[in-house]
Amino acid sequence: MEKAHILESTYRLFTRYGIKRVSMDSLAGKFRISKRTLYEFFDDKKSLVTQSVGHMRRRLHTNLKQIEDGCQTPLEAALITAIKTYNLLNPQCEAFRDELPCYMDAVGELERLRTDFQMAFLQRFREGVAQGSLLPNQNYELLASVCWEHISGGNLISGDFNNVLYTLLRGCATPVGLIEMERLNAQWQERQFYSKHL
Image (cartoon, rainbow, N blue to C red):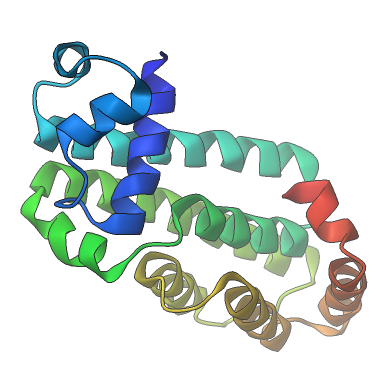
């Protein structure tokens, strides 16, 4: 069994049920490996929690590179950056969010993930302003923070998050950007947007 598969699956279990409810015994059973083998990969549960969040941060880097290569416009890239990050990290149950602060190294990994997301998101905004699709002199740092709060807070279901994101970006768009947003919305409604990117 590949370590990456264990990390991703374990992250999904932690975020679905909470860290405390996922035991090393249950993980060994799920992966059909001995508990001893699991401990060869990870010194303890704390290490597993930290590495699983770190694995998701590395996945985000891969996604951001693919987005950069696959999008035609900064607005499209901003939408895809936020939606893919949301989909990568969610859903997160309340127990996971409550228990994570007990694992400070994992909190550090999540903070680095937040920084990576916000830097990439802000870069898309800068490109949009330079290309004339987004208004200058807007508080894009605040917009990036609001998006991150919705991503990490897990308070919105996916469709609602997508609608909030679209509305926020539309509010910052120039007339040229509004035309682009309408094009993206038409693709969104026809599901071409999702089949192309997600």
